[in-house]
Amino acid sequence: MLVIKLWRDESGVVNSADLALTATILVLGMIVGLVALRNQVLQELSDTASAVGALNQSYSYTSKTITSGSFSAFVAGASFSDLPNLDASIDVTAYAPSPGNAAPGED
Image (cartoon, rainbow, N blue to C red; front, top):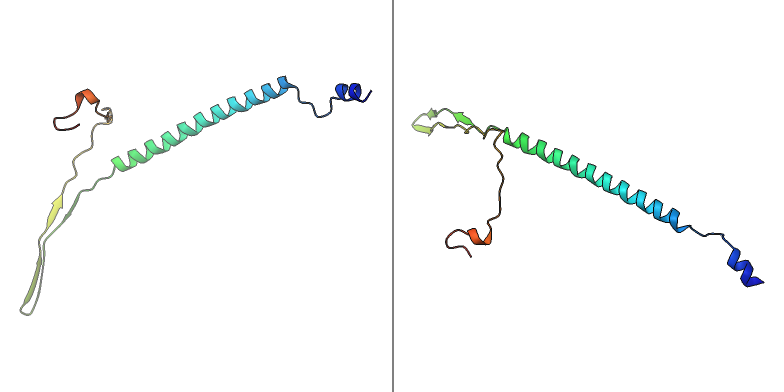
């Protein structure tokens, strides 16, 4: 009698179809969330790369001479003009050399 009562007891039983459906929904949600996260990280890295590429490192300063009595100090002027960056339409991609195309002297 106790065995029959225990056999018919359904308290705490999780239907395997419910469990499979719940797991499927969770996995699909995680995939969509991770894809969205990846896209946003790539967008932020692209924005950072664009900002760094837009930096202009040109500078110049003129010469300066300071004289005080018999002491004289002189600093020569200098300048540097940053070259323009590559056109945005050019795709610059780095490829690892394949073993068959190694440069001479490389193993």
